[in-house]
Length: 163
View (cartoon, rainbow, N blue to C red):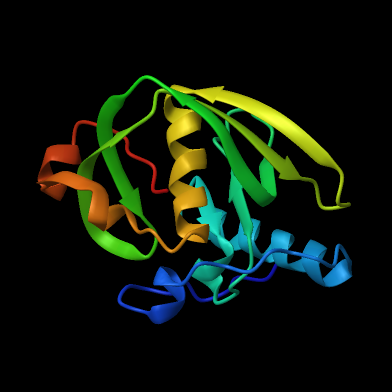
């Protein structure tokens, strides 16, 4: 189990669009494992490679509760639909929470760790997490999308996971 340091804002790696993954090897598999370990250790549900200091198009979403871990390599958003406003947080912004508007549903195309392509459709919280992480890969941070900052005391009655 390897826990990596989470890159906090402000840091240039977080706002720089990432490079496409071209090698699907043991190094990539190790990065995915380290990212998952780091995310779980920080009570997150999603993490992108720039958040652990790697400027490549790799992200993970794990909602827990028996759900599959979504590993996204070179993800592309194919379609979105609807809109919903909800509260988000981010591992790179400790103690910052805010209301963010995102599409209600998303369809993406991404690669597995072995390089094979897949498509995935997601709705609601899962779609929000996926889009939050893909934004990281494009150098877009959630603080730029906040409609209203939410005081942490407002979260006491809700169990918010951190994206």
